[in-house]
Image (cartoon, rainbow, N blue to C red; front, top):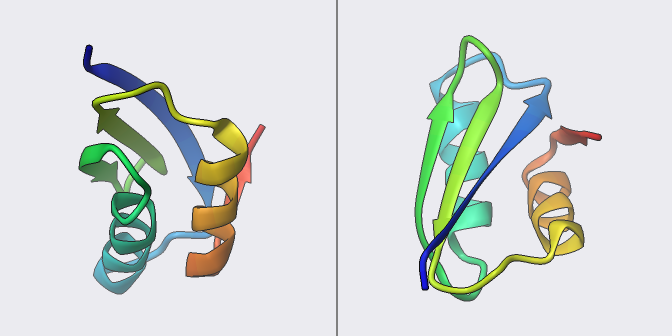
Length: 69
């Protein structure tokens, strides 16, 4: 079963930001794709299992950005 969730990330301003967030979130178990919309700060995460929002938050924090609740 594939699940897709959209989150809003605060603080991304450039391509490097997009790459950093994509790499960290993409490394989570089960994640098959991460699409980032720099203009809106939205990230759409597709995975083959439900994701723990705390794990996504931790990955975004690790990249140096903040997940908006």
